[in-house]
Length: 155
Image (cartoon, rainbow, N blue to C red; front, top):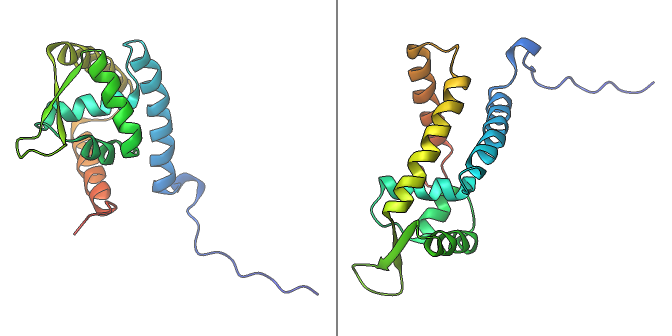
């Protein structure tokens, strides 16, 4: 007679799938739509993330952008070089000197970013069509708290 294996810890019922699994599925679906939509504007998802961050922060370095976009500094350097070559960003010397360059959006970069934003608004409108404003705000707040809790440099 073989020994029975202990049952794993309580598994969520089918109707109550693990939250992390649901977030993963949603992320994969969003990413697929993002990749397709942004490609129509000539931008990759990583490039869009970098451009979006440049809109909110003044002159981050390539290394800072890499951390935000979840890519290696080497990969972000290639992204930054390509965005600069296409005239979507410019890089200026860091105010404190040294070899660090600070990236900034150009007028063309702002224009491309606006077109991408409009397309992403459409994706979010479809995704949230059946979600009321209160639930949407709760979702936004909850996801923000969760992301901060898992941040490697969290306090």
